[in-house]
Image (tube, rainbow, N blue to C red; front, side, top):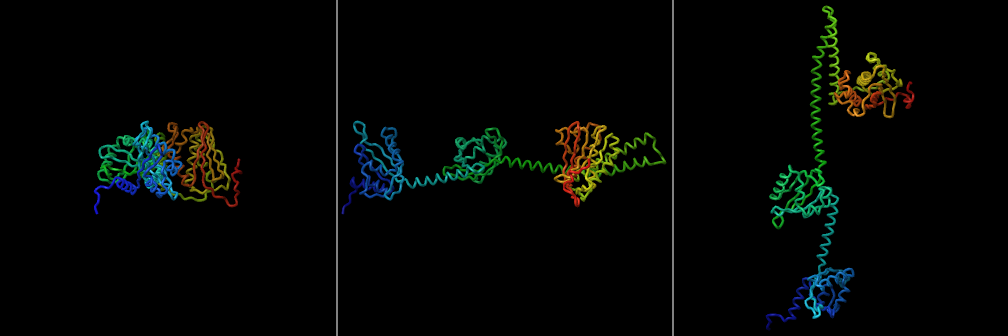
Length: 521
C-alpha cells in the first residue's frame, strides 16, 4: 500500500482542527453578510454539543452566550469592524449542553472586505478558559482575604524586590501603610526609595549595610531605625524581613514592620526610672550613713556645752554663758534636722518600722497642745482647746502620730501671725478619722501647693527668717502614709491653711456610727 507524502488539503485542515480541539481551541469562519458560520462543529463540541446540534449562524450562537455578556461581545466586534482595534477580542460565558456556564475566549479578525467596504469574511478562534478564570477567581478571593486580614494588622506587611543593580521597588504594601508611614500604599509602590529617604541620617548607613548583608547571605534581616514622616513626626520602626533569590538574579524580601515608638519611649522611661531609683538609693544610703556619723560628734559638742553651763567651780561670764547657750541651741537644731533626715532616709528605703496600736486620739492631741504652749506664747499665737469626741480612737503608732501632730501644730504656730489662732479638731468621717490643724497664718499660694512636702523645699519661707529644715513635712507625710493614712492641704494666701490627716478608725464599743454630728462647740 502506498502512502502520500503530504495529506490532501481537506485532510490537512481536518487534522489541524482536530489538533486544536484537543488543546481546547476551535477555529471558525464567519460571513457577516450571510451570517453563516463554518467550522462551528468544533465550537459546539467544546460546549458538549453534537454535530446535529450545531449553531450555523451568529444569531443562533448568540443564544448560547450569557445574556449579561452579549452586548459587550457585540461592542467588541463593532470596534474592530470600525478599525478601532486590530482584533476582535472578548471573554464571555457560554452555556454547555448540561446547562453549565463555561468561560470562552474568542478572538477574530476581518480578512476580506467587499468593494464597498463591508466585511465579507471573519476568521477566529475559540478557547475554553474556564479553568484559568476559576483559578483567577480563586486567586482574587485569596488576595481579598489576605488584604482584609492585613488591613487589621497594626503594622505593614510588604514584599520588596531589589534587582541587584541598585534599584528596588515594593511589589506589595498593605493598606495600613498610611497609618504607619503617612504615605499611601500606591505612593510607596510607585517610588521604592521613598521609605529609605525618610530614615534619619544617623540610622541610614547602618540600615542599608544590614540590608545589603541580608541580600548577600540570604539571612533574615531584623531592623530597628527611626524615620521622619511627611508630617514631620519622628517615629521608630521595628521589623523583620526574610530574603530569597528570584529567577532574575534579584532578591525578594517578605517582611513586616510596625511603629515601635511607644515601646522605645517606655524602654527609655524604664531606663530613666532605674537610674533615678539607683541614684535615690545611693542618696538615701549616703544620707543615712552621714546622719549616723554626724550624731556622735554633735552629741559631744552639746554635751561639752552643757558641762560648761553646769560647772560651778569655774562659772562662765554672762557673755560666755550666752554664747554657750547659742552653741547648745544651734546643736539642738542641727540634731533635730539630723533626726528628721534619718527618719526620711528610713521612710524612703522602707526601713522604718512602726508599732501600731489603738490610740485614744483626744488625749494624744491635748498632750501635744500642752507641749507647744510655750512656743505659742512666745509667738503670741492662741491655741484653741482641742475639739474631739472623747471616745475617738485610731489605729496608729503613738510615738510617730505624736511626731506628726507636733510637727503640723508647730508649723501652724511658726507660720502664723501675731494674735493669730491654731485650732485642732478631730471627727469621724466616711473613710476613718480626720484630724484638722487650722491656722490663721500667711497661707500658701495655690501654685506652690504641688511642691509642698518636697524634701528641703521651704517654698517662699526660705528667706523669711523662720527656722526650718524643709524636711519635717516630708517626714510627716511619709509617716502618715506608713500608718495607712493620707495628708490633704487647703490654703489661701494671706488667710491661713488647713492640714487634714486621715487615719484608720477603731470603732469604740457600743459607739454610735453618727459620732461626727456631736462635736463639742
